Length: 113
Length: 110
Image (tube, rainbow over all chains, first blue to last red; front, side):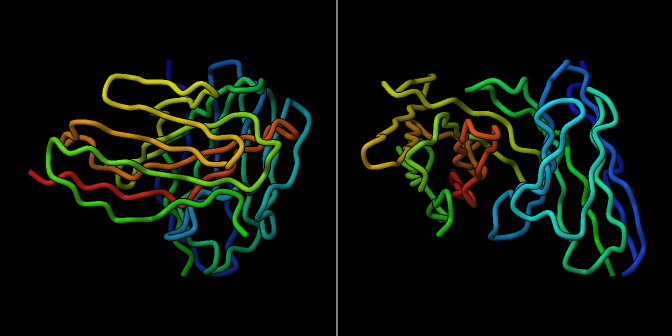
């Protein structure tokens, strides 16, 4: 099983450019999440989708949009990238039940110049 | 106040040492607790869940104190391969949101 697959692994953008980070899971999980990780800040939740067809804001949603395309896929879009969005982005998923652990993708290193 | 707080370390310990990490959480309604391990530039991976009665997995022991709202991780007989960042994670059932501590860095020295 591939688990959680994220693309791309690395990306460099100029300020103002847009891009979409893709995430797909093959574990039939209900819930999917997007986190960003910055030095000294830990992982912070950007958006999550508790189930297909629903999305909710997390702790740091400003400057991002998401789409839960189907049960497998959950994409994160930066409409106008800013240097403050330079970070490592992780997609994660789980079954959505209590005590269910998170499975993570391998991450996207994004630099905005 | 952060939802989950950890001492960032770094902890530098010799091989064979015992080391303990603590983590505190702010929401008394938190339901699930985990320790994740993260290697440099890699994704976090589950080390162990933390149960109310405490649990052990080989050299690793996790404890939960709901009254004081803290979680601990004890690593015995440290190995070089234990060098990593250890993340404390707390789940609130409402919204199924997970909150991460900033992580505690461990380096095991030969």
